[in-house]
Length: 508
Image 1 (cartoon, rainbow, N blue to C red):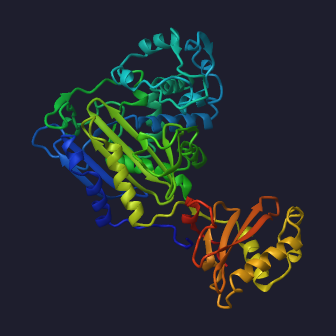
Image 2: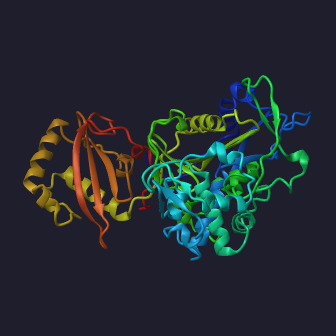
Image 3: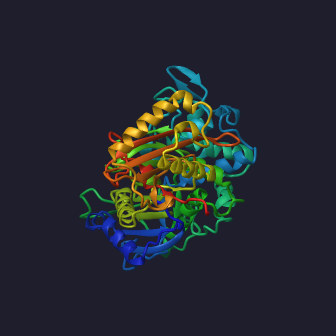
C-alpha cells in the first residue's frame, strides 16, 4: 500500500467500540473497578471505566490511579539506557564490575553475567514472579544478602528466555552505584519530570487517598472480593512498584513509539535510537505461546523492559503487563500507527493483557493499519522506474541501468532475456494502458527493496529489485514472476507484513 499521508484517524466512536469489545462482561466481573483507554500518538481517543475502585460509592474515573506493577520495568530500562548514553555504565560489562558482592552461580560455580543479559531476561536466572510479588518491599540489605549468598541460575547465561525480576532489579542497584542516588529518584528526574508524567510514582504517599484504586482478590471467579493491602516498595520496587494513570501511560507509550517517526518527541530526554533499542526483540520467545493469547505472530521476544511482537499482519507491536496481588495492568501499542491501548483493573484475575489486546486488534483491523511506514531510498525508486521502462520496452538485460557488476555474472544476460520473453508471452504481452508507476508499487520489505506490477493481457508480472548500499547504490538483484491479475505474491510465498507496509515514495 502506498500513500503520502502516514497518519491514521481513530474516531471516538471506533475507539469506544473497541474498548467495549475488550472490557467485556467477563472482564467487568473479574474486578471491582477497571479502566481502559485508547490513545493515538499520545492523545486519548476514548476512555471506558467500570466499578468502584475502593468498593465504596465513588466511581472509577479517568484520573483514578492504579498500580502498574511490572510495567515499571520499561521506566527502569529507559533510565539505564540514558545512563549508558552518558557513559556512566556499560551494559556489556560483568555486573560485578558495579556490584562486586553479587554472586550468580550455575552448576556449583560462580558465573559472570552482564547487564544486557539481565535486562533482556536471558541471564539464566529463573522465573520468580510469585516469590518477588511478596518480597517487593524487602530492604536493600535483605536483597543484597540474597545475592551475596549466591543466587542460582536455572540455565546457562545467554541461552534461554526466563522472566527474572531479581535479575532486572540488579540494574536498579547498578543505577544507584553509578549515580549515588536512589534509583527511584533517578527515574523521576531522568524521565517522569521532563516528560510531565506527574501522576506516575513508585509509592502511593503522594496521592490523595480518594484517587487511589485499592487492590482486591477473588477466589470464586468474581462472586466475592477480598481487600488486598499494597505490597511494599523496597529494593525490588524499581521493577514493579509503580502507580500511574491512563493519561500518563498514553504519553509514555507515545514517547517511546514516536522514536519510529521522523519527528520523535523529546530527543533530549532519551535518544530516539535508544528508544528503538527498547523496542527491538533481543531474547527470542517461542510462539505460539499462551502469553500471546493466540495471536498470529511471526516471532516475539523480550527487549529491555518490554515485550516485542512481530504480528504477521500488523508488524511490530510493543507491550508489557503488570501484575501484583490485587492488580492487573497492561499497555500495548502499534509502532507503525501510534495506536495504543491501556487497561487497568484492581484484581489479579482481571486479565488486562487479554482486554487491551482484544481492543487494539479490533482497532487495527478496522482502520486497516499498515504494518510499517517505509520510505524507500530515492535510488531504489529511480532504479525500479528505469528497470520498469526497460522491461516494458523490451530492452535486452545487457543494457539494464543501475546494475551492480555481478548481476549479469550470476544470471547471464541471454538467460534473463529468454526467461523474460517466456513470461511476457505467458501473460499475453504487456497492456498498453499501464497505471502510473506509484500506483503499481505493491510492497517494500526495506528501504533498499521494491516490488511492483506490470499488467499483462492475461496476467501480471511482479518485479522485485534489491539494491546494495554502496556510496552509489546499485541493483544487486532483480527478478520477475508471473502472477494472476491483482495478485501480490508469487506462488509458494507466504503472507508477510511487508506487503502491508505503507510506502511513502519520494516526491517527484
